Image (cartoon, rainbow, N blue to C red; front, side, top):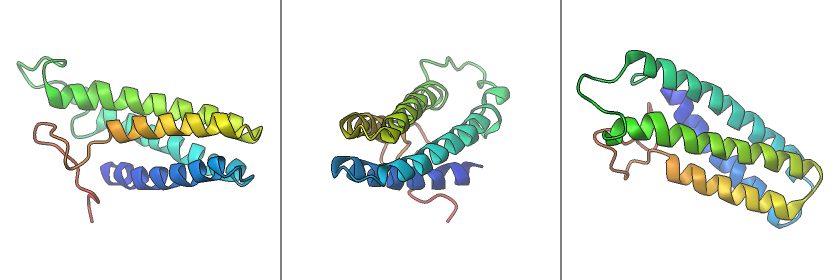
Length: 141
């Protein structure tokens, strides 16, 4: 599941950039592309929820003995920061989709820019220093 979650990251980033370009250039195709972005983002949310509960460091596995959630950088990132930021980004993508149906290009542009920034800030990139657990650019490949 982690590999699917990581591959979907690239699909969502690509679709997000395409939608942004379409919104900035006021292309009517943003209606259809924003639907694909919405579907991908919600699929990613479902996979992510599974990861939060049943993944390698899922909530059902519990915290290791002696670890306090907010003091441990690793668990704070994967149990609090990452899920919260991604849910905010998916909410923004969902609202942007509604605006795209009405061809409100300015609102779509700003909502997608904020969603993109939230996603870029919350992804565990290889260069991020999350104690022992940065993700590779293409995991599993």
